[in-house]
Structure formats: structure tokens, C-alpha cells
Image (cartoon, rainbow, N blue to C red; front, top):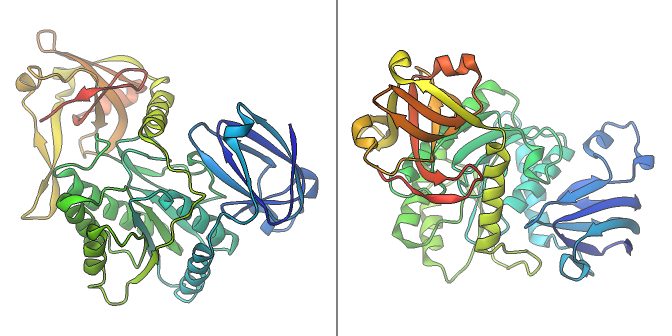
Length: 412
């Protein structure tokens, strides 16, 4: 179908949908989109990519018309997937925060500004995309850290990832993870909340060390805030990662948010921006859609895997579990007795295959431990050379089918 939208209108599009911009100019979360024939050779135009927008299922993109625009749209359900509104869905508060941060970053060009987004409601990842695209348009360099174990946009759920923002970001495919830490769970329960925080600090520190001219780090977080454990987690995360800027989707009725902000204010020079007004145009994914997205991400990776047999004795492989030592405030590896492990429902648990220095080689699923014949059967895409490097198998807690479906948990 062909649809025309007027300057100043926004077309809210739910996936799966494909849109081709035929005429005019659109802005999608700070990314400028123009037809191919209007491309120029200016440096700014390199930020603009092609004129085709793919909206995956369970996703929702706002297309704001900077000019009168003509679109060719392919979608399964026009009534459910397309909504036209008479204003920009990006609120004036977002624009204000963006403009203030642009000035702040430019005034601190010799410092990397860490910006963390916090809240229960939807919008955290969306505002990060919006900020990242606008920072990039203004010539700034930075990266994206995804700490949401259950809704990773860069790579696989159960992992933490950091990657350079090289071009405009709309979908997770727009960022290539440069370093990954494996957690093995989709929720930071127990000591995972401390492990996640320390790993995130390490990811940021390593990135800044290797990328000297980094202007900003955008830090996405999960929505776990409620209850005492959620407050402990976010307080520890903020203390450990130490963001310079905190953007909070605030709700006066949630006392846990008030407690977290109170603790965050202990650093006097930290800038805290509250977004109190709910955005009526945000699309809140329900549990089924989140589960679908998570399964899709798993399936995309697992479809490339195959069954591999690894000799246990030949490689002298240890089974380990990540843990947290509160006395040293460090992550430690706890060795797991393989004989005790075989008594538990370990089949199909997600694992990380490590070398002798505990560096991640690949991620996989653990199928069978055969103690009698001395081998372990796994599901991964390891090369032969990578297989010979394996010295440790780091156990997660999530159990999956080879299609990415949830099968249960391994409790150690």
C-alpha cells in the first residue's frame, strides 16, 4: 500500500512491517531517512543509510515526518500495525535532555561521560537509541553497553555486551558486540546482581582503555527495581559502574525508585534527569512478546550450532560456576564436582566455553556428560582449533531446547 504523511505527523509502526520511503524525509529515533535519489556526498549524509525500514515482530518504531512524505508499506495488518498521530511521539522532555547532554559532553571533551538509563516502564532502550543517534549526528564517538540479561538487543540473552556505535542504531543488528561476558541467566537473581555490576564496570573500563577518544558510554539496564533485592541491585550497580549521568523514568508511587535516587545523589556532581510524564505513544511489550523476542534471539544463534564431542581427560576440562566474594568484592570461579553435577538435571543448560585464562571462546548448550567414556557432548559452533583451547566449562542456570525454548533451570 502507498501512504502519505504530512510534515509534523508521526506514523507509529508495529512489526512485522517493511517500509520504503519514496518521497520526503523521516526521522526515526534521531536517524534521518531520505530517498536514495536525494543522497548527497556530504559527511553528514553518511549518517543516513538506505530508505528501507524493516520493523521486526514485537517491535514498534515511530516515523516522524520532517517533510511531507510518501511511503510504500507492506504489513500483515494495517489496522493493528499502523497508527497516525498529529505530533512527534518524542516528548519535549527527551529533546531537552538530549540538548543538555550534547552541551555537557562537548564541554567535557577530555572525559568519557557515562550515561545510565533506569526505570521500570518501557522506553529505556528507545531513549538510548535516540540519544546515540543524535550524539553521532553531532560528531561524537561512543558505545552502547547492554546489561539487560533478558532482553539483549546486541547478542544473546544471558550475556552482557558492549559495542561501538558506528552508525545509526534502530535495531540490535546495528551494533556489533566487541566484548561479551557470560552470565547464563535471564534475571540477576542471587549473587548474579553483583556479578553483573562488576562485569559491566570491567566492560566499560576495558572499552575506554582501548578507545581513547570515547566521548560517551550509553548504559541500558533491566527493569528490576521493586522489592528490597531490586534496590540493593541497582544501588550496587550505580556504585560500581559510577555513571556521570542518570536518566530515570520516574514514578512517584514507586518508593524503591525514590530510595535508589537518594543513594545516587550521594555523588554530588552526578547529573540526574527525571522523566515523570508517561509517554502515551510508547508500546509496552507484554510477557508473551518478550518471551517471543528472547526465543527468537536464541533460535537465531542456535540454528548455526551442531553437536560436538569434547574429550574430558585429554583436555583436562573443569566445570565451574561464577560466584561473588563480598570480602574482596570480586567475581570468583567455584569449581563444580562433575560427579555431583551428573546427578542434577543439567541437560541442555546454557554454558560458556573458556580457555585457561577464563576468556570466552564460544557459548553452547551442554547435552551429555559421559564419565565412563570420558567425553562431554555439547551443542555449539566451535572450530577444531577452538575445541583444543577449552579448559573450563562455565555453567549457567537456564536450560533451553535447540530451538531456543525454555526448558527449566539448573540450580547449583
